[in-house]
Image (cartoon, rainbow, N blue to C red):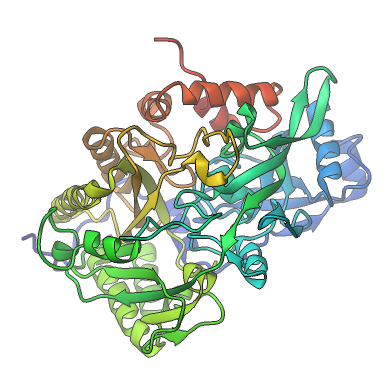
Length: 574
């Protein structure tokens, strides 16, 4: 086995002060709300003539989750309702502006704002989280929700009416519109003998949409209009996960009866056992998945014991569980512990990336001790209280992400082969004095987006969801690797992992909100992946159909940016 002891090695060539600043951003416990500066009316009138008078303008900075994409002094507004959104879009079209909907900016990829965007660019941010937050319950356990509402607010509202979702993303600050734009997901498949409750899905949140209202181009009117699309309509399929190429103001979601969940955490199973080859004896991920259907493994770099979370449906409180009445029950990960902050600070300020093994073991030690001291190793309560566990104050790291469609019986094989390759390459890099990963591998498992889960006759499949059904598959394994922004050699390392996944597992898809399409020096840049691998991964013409629909619904490309112009292109026949 590779010697994982810490040793000195030369600071890598090409490492810049910008890399330091990007890495330092990972430690910043910044509020999710953007910084707003009221606009001088005279300046606004001069720069944005004819802008709708009823919508207040201001200057705003933009910062994505890891601080790698930033822009200062952008024009922004917060429309009070869908009518004002339409007025803003109409003005933008007539004045050559591009509109970018912004929620909590909790993402990595350049779907909202691209790196290098400045105040001089013709970009207008439309903040949805200020006013597009309405919630109302309709008949049939359906909820009507504005796209600016946060997932925490939505789940709290549902819980108050005895309703909930099977699985959700871990951060509660995500806006619903942002989550739907990138087919956000949790972690859940049916446990052995489990029957899904009516109104639930094991796929993405997008698969629960019954209808949505969006701003779209009306050719006969020669103008943008608000239009509601039912789940059975062809164009709805493209809007269900539009990647920022549309602006949705409101949705109606199908929901079902809420569940109480037990979440048990443990850090006593070696990675070699948890991620063992299929058919191995012992405590394997497949075994926990069979028993409960809901698992997540967090494997800190250069450690041997992953943090495994296992959720199970438990109508009554188990004797040993702690009853939790609110979410975010891991304070040791919600806030950056001193030992972790000190290590990250040294790695960033001194380019001491060789401390990655020390940081990984420190994070594991903090988690192991924290689970005990905060009595959070065995939690029980309404679903959202164990499903939501990431606050904006956690360590800000980069993340890549992929979904591997497979059969449920093949999950252990996928996990084993990926983790074996990851470990081998990480050891090889470390042996040559390179430490490209200082965060963790995160593994989740979900079902696919079966349109029948929506309960609508003729429901369309979510066109661009990574969970779009695949022949011969019923499950997806989600694989993410986290590391500090600016970590040397990270892009080259992640490029190797990406190529392995594409070549080893047919149909591998990217996780839209995270990092992908790696060259040796940048994410979202590899032409082969952008123009070939990604479109091909959706099969049966789904990519071209969706892109064509989005172009028709917004032929003037008001909703878009330079990156989306490059990504969302229909492929030439043949």
